Image 1 (cartoon, protein in one colour):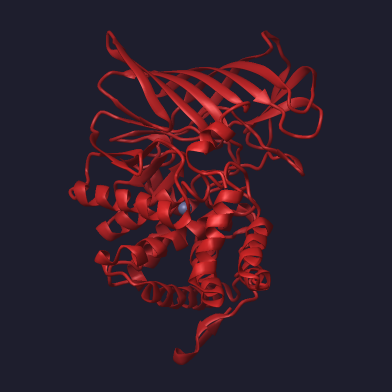
Image 2 (cartoon, helix red, strand yellow; image 1 turned 180 degrees about the horizontal axis):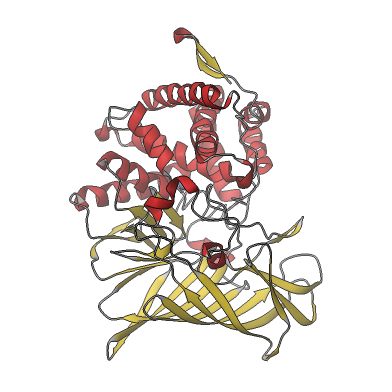
Length: 501
Ligand SMILES: [Zn+2]
């Protein structure tokens, strides 16, 4: 995600424009077979969705499982949620028509076609526990069927409707990750993107008013109109989530980059051709610098969103209300970079939010460096980032007396959104440039390529990243990374007397 504080950071500091393995065709074959599959049938009514879902869940753990947990993210949008998606500071902007609440009600759960015991748990009722009739052994599958109703709130967020669009991110029950710590049931957070999931296949059938156009993850393989409705079938292979945006105002630009069809859905953008060029160049640049984007489709979607944007597999949401066009382009680039860092190489975004955000942010620098026609230079980007970071530290110390500059905190351990943004994005970006200066361009990009290929289709950890950089560079860069991550590295410009940690 890219949020407003980063945009403010760009706006304040950068008066010039910015500143402000197995990947490729083999990927889908290797990771798209013998994995969890979701069959989801959704029917959009006015501000609600009726859903039927069959999850054919594969136990990829080495444990015998007696239950399966799902996240119920829409319940974090309810009036009683403690871990709300919007912080107090943003409430008036996010809810322009006053408070509005969303939820998901689970009506029925079957396991292998038989009634199953289930319960909705966690502080915010954002976790669904389904009890299995018999133990599920490693590598075995179980079919879990459920019915539900989703209420869509009127909010400018990943999940919510607004005057122009309906954003449907994180709406359906998605299986929690079972990792070395057991089931991951972390809650929502107004900081960052509190998500963590494994790759799965999706067959989604969506019925909606025929005046709407549907942008989605995956490939839309079939559409049929009946009376006032349209039904579209979508197939997505080896993706870690599934999201949609609907609008009756969309215009579409379509092109092909390196074999991937790229679609730009927009309604307000007065420079749509330029924006589309930026998106195409971003896809091409990251293909060449990091490794090939393995999917056949990518959608860039202008939408109502209180922040800069949000990433999903094969689909990125870009806010229609960014004040500066440069920020709009930067957001497109940043969110597209998340297809590599979050999409193909995943991570636990609640526990290590900085891991994908700092890589996506540094990818913006890589984009401009490789597309000199935009006249935004790497050294200026980094210098301005350092200046901005020092300014943040100064201001924060003035207001709060002290500042915690560590990056390795869970999302709910950051006191404010600026604290998270400056740690995960700005400090993270400076960190990657520092490592690059130490090991040189070749080893730096070789490291990123190796990290991308080695962890494609998986969830990576900070330790995985450090190890790849050490292996490729032959240098002990882990200590450098750690000094940034644990907050001890000094970032500052001695010339102007600022020398902050
Ligand atoms: Zn991001």
